[in-house]
Length: 343
Image 1 (cartoon, rainbow, N blue to C red):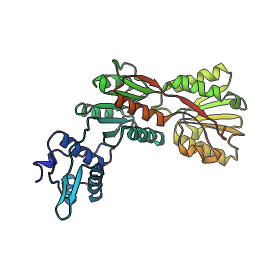
Image 2 (spheres, rainbow, N blue to C red):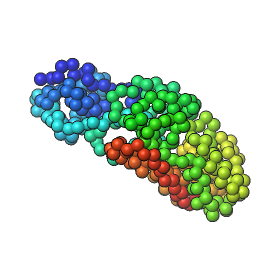
Image 3 (cartoon, one colour):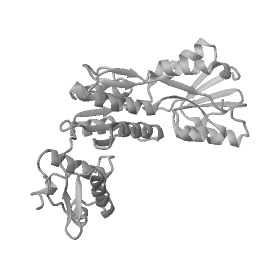
Image 4 (cartoon, rainbow, N blue to C red):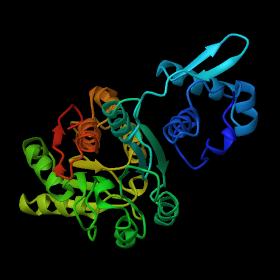
């Protein structure tokens, strides 16, 4: 028979970046664990799911297929789907907050989910570096999760972020990418040391940088990027007597031979390369280019773009292992110079 009030236990959150088919499967697994859905219970048809949850038939079908692959769901031709097995443990349910989804953030996410394993529920939210949205989403999600994993980057309101983060029980908290001042207690963290990292990476590139007379950092105004990046860059330039300039708008900046540009934002890299091509300047000879954050595309374009970057795959993997091992360590992720033709 069908479980009573089945749709009371199934929740599709429009704010969540978790694919709807995974939200469907996670809800069913949680209801099984809670004893709301039992072995041999018949489940609604694909058409019923689609209508009641306002999702596509493809989404509903994909959710059921996922549960069949886990061995939880069976089907009988002409009768429908039923719960075949309830002998599993889904003790971990994770709420994941990213400030944005970019190429390198996707690397973190993929590594994190792969290391956890597919039977662990992950609800994924993107708050667009907006503190107000972050606070609203987190305030509504303070129950029902075993862990909260947060990348805490904000355009405004960063100085208040610790207050809402401190409401999370510390044994459930994992901070990614940067440590937030004011967050107290025994919690896990996998982070970059932004000031030290850029300084050391530029030191590693010092021989190549010596071909140029000026290093310019493209650091947009109203950016979520940590100010420690700017501090480490300025410290290096002063230490080794490089002319230097922090600019906010690469499109308005005149470009001259003998300069090196360090960009943080992907779109700024596109604008910079377009300007260099229009001026017939040779990248890596007339002008140097260094891009923050390694992505697969940067290994290929223009014979390779030099990057300074942490290991995002390692960051995601370490965070997942901390959850699986119930660890509260603080781990600083390695940071690398990937020297290529653009320098």
